[in-house]
Structures are given as C-alpha cells and as structure tokens.
Amino acid sequence: MSVWQVVAEWSRVCVIPQEHWSTFIVEDDFKFIASSGLNAVRIPIGWWIASDPTPPPPYVGGSLHALDNAFLWSQ
Image (cartoon, rainbow, N blue to C red; front, side):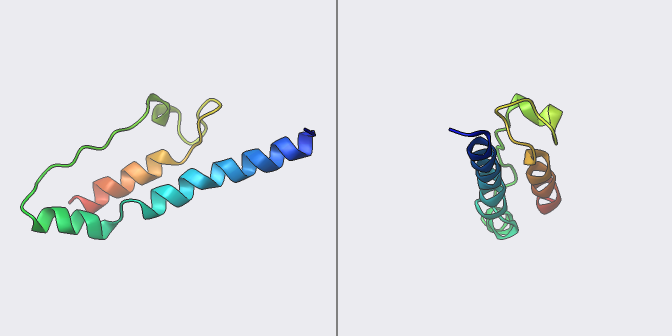
C-alpha cells in the first residue's frame, strides 16, 4: 500500500464519524425525549474527547462538537 493510499483511506475514515454524529441523534430526538416526560439522557463519551479537536491516533476529532450540540438541545 502506498503512502497516498494510506492518506486517502485515513481521509475517508475521518469523515465517517462526522456523518454519524450529525445524523444519529438530532435535535428532534431530544424534543421527543422531553415530550415523553423524561428529563435525563446518558451520553457515553471516550476519554479522547479531552484532546478534541486533535486527539491522538487512531481517534478522530470532532466529538466535542457533537456533545456541545447535545447540551444545547437539552435546554
């Protein structure tokens, strides 16, 4: 595998979590949770979020933004 193939693959891998974070749980989900009478959610996070936006390999940055969204939506 060439260096260019590795770089191309890593670039593709970095996009996958971003797409997941922006579509898996959205603001409407928080509205539904609240309208169902629930007042708490559990949000599992990895230790590498403390290094966001540049966590150590092999972790991908950007998860802190997803957590920020959850805090905003839960108000």
